[in-house]
Every structure is written in C-alpha cells, then in structure tokens.
Length: 439
Image 1: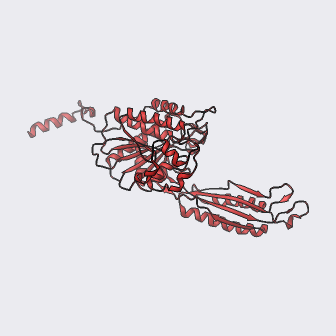
Image 2: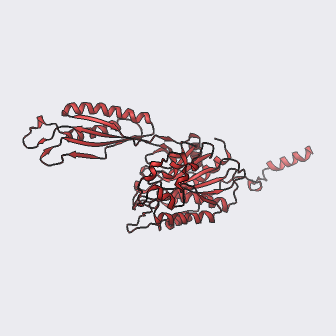
Image 3: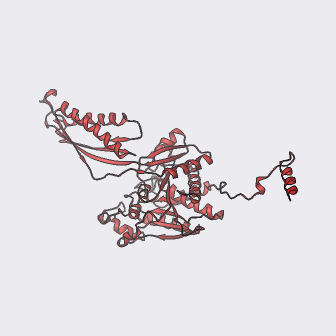
C-alpha cells in the first residue's frame, strides 16, 4: 500500500503532469455575479409607477403609485420563489428558507417610496438589488445555512415609518401626522395592507436577526468625484438642531448712525460666517448648516431688530457635535458683544443619535470588494436611512454606490448600471460570508 501511495505521489509531481483544480470538487460561490441588464431593466420598470412629466418619479408612500410599485415588487419576489408577507407596519418581507431554518435569518433590503418629484434610484437600487440576490441564489441552486429575508420598508421618505415600527419607536401620536399622499400615517399603513392597531406585534428583539445590510446610492458626490466604486459606510451621522434668536433694536435706517446701531442681521451674518469657520476648523466629515433666517421687521428702511436662525450639526460622534456647538456658542458671545445684541440658542427636540455600523460586517464588505477587485472608501452617511434604526437592534452594515454628479431627490438622479451591479455583487458576497461565519 505504501509503495502504491509513493508511486501516485511521484506521478503528481512529475514535470509532465499537472494537477487540474477543476478535477476536485470546489465548494465556492465566488463566481456568482449580478445580471446587470436585469437590474437596470427592473429599475426602469419600477420607475413607471408614479412617473411624471419631469422624467422623475412621484411615488410617495401610501399613494396609488406606491401600491402599484409594491405590487410589482411582490410579484417579482414571488416569481423568485420567496414566501412573501406584509407585516402590520406595511413592510414587505420575502423569505428564502435556509439549510438550518432554526437559525436567525439574515435581513437585507431598502425602500421604493420616493419624495415628491424624486428620482428612480434612491432606495430602489437597494430593493431591486435585494431581489437580484434572491434571483441569483435561485438560479444557481445555492443553499444558504441561514434563512435569507429581503425587506421593502414602508414610508422611508416620510420619516422611516416601517423601520421605526420594527424597533418600537413609532409612537401612537405619529400616526396622526399627514403624509405626502394626503392620508394620515395611520390611514396610509392600512391602505398598503398593514394594521396600525397591531403595530406593537411587529417590534423586533435583538435575537430575531443575525444581521441587516442595506445597499443604497450615496446621494452625495464623493464616490463619483473620486472615481471610487464602493462606499463602506462607517455609520449614519447624528443630527442636532438649534433655534437661534438674535435680539437687537429696530430703528430708522436713515437717521441711525452706523456706530449706534444694534443690527440683529449683522450679528446673524457674522454668526453664520463663524459657524462655517468653526466647523471647518475640525478634522473629519462633520457638517454645520444655517438653513433658515427670518429677519424682522423685514423692511428696506428699518434696521433689523430681530433675527430667527437655524443651526444644524451632523457627525458620527455625538460628543463631537456638542463640542462644535460649544465652540460656536463662544463665538456667539463675542459677536453679541461686538454688535450690542443678545444671542440665545434653543436645542430642539428633533435629534437623531449616530448609528455606527458593525465593524465585523464592514470587514466582510471590504473583503468582498477586494475579492471583486473594486475600489472602496470608508465613509459616513450624511443622510438618514432605515439602517440607522436597524442598527439599534442588530449588527448592521451599509454599502454605497456612486450617484452621478452627487444628485439625489431629483429627476436628474442617476446611478450607472455597472455601479448598481457592483453594489449588488458586494452585497451578495458579504451576505454569503455572513452566512458561513460567526459575528
């Protein structure tokens, strides 16, 4: 027996013999790729629901166009072999069983509702991409260990309604709010097949899913400008808003000398410049914005006596947000003294805490991008997404693909077919890695 083994070994390593890897069974799904044309075709097909004269889409949540788009997706999900259901919050969930159905499912998806006169890619790329992954697995007869579930969240653009319901933060008073469709959120949820009275039943626990991933267009211009194919999202920024009141003294513009004025608008202008300087003085991706300024009494011949302003600061670190604000507040004290005005700040109750993505999942995303020979960049998300809610209850990852020109929420929003396919491929191979590895 030993002699036979030695002969075999000698033959294997003889110069005239080569070992063909194809002759050995290879348990690998590395060859799996998205059907780029199918993804593009489905994006365009979905865009027909709510299409308007500008070339964009007004498929706002709870509208007739929303229902048509949802029915389109449900049909395609069923054709892909998924068990499809609508939960009480109106989320559409499609399940593909795994080899071990007792294991926690892996969840992935996005949304298909749009802003009024919006584009055809925001949210839709992640939803169509999730469907494409289910198609690939079916066509290649891939059996995953964990069940895979894709989700289309309800009313993302109106305030993350579907994902907030899943984490138990959609409160009863929010149901009375009016949506873009002209229906209250309560009526809208019922219109798309949910049941507002049973919302508590959809709340998830931290043990319900192994992980959640969302593929999305960047909605900014960093990837497109830098020629990078994949964004590995570090987290979704926290947001804090302040109302600023500047009190001066309204007086006659013609009879009041310049050195005797208490010009609230002058103070507001100086403060706006100071905010910009403070935010730019820090390293990182923080942003600060003055987006509203109400000047009173707003007359050409009256020195402004009062100004109401807004301040928004976003960053991945809550601590950094308030450090920036502290520096701005110090600048405001100096400006108030220089202009003989009073400047006060009020923290508004519209904050969103940062949602940091899971470091282990980010490594899987990076490994997938490298395996696919795609360039990538770690970056924050400056916009809100359903992922920020899911991150509170389960390990979460997010993948960005380029937005041409950084345009989003616009009929001119566009992501190239090859970029969509790249994103789907990275998502697919990240999911397959998650399926086999522990977190």
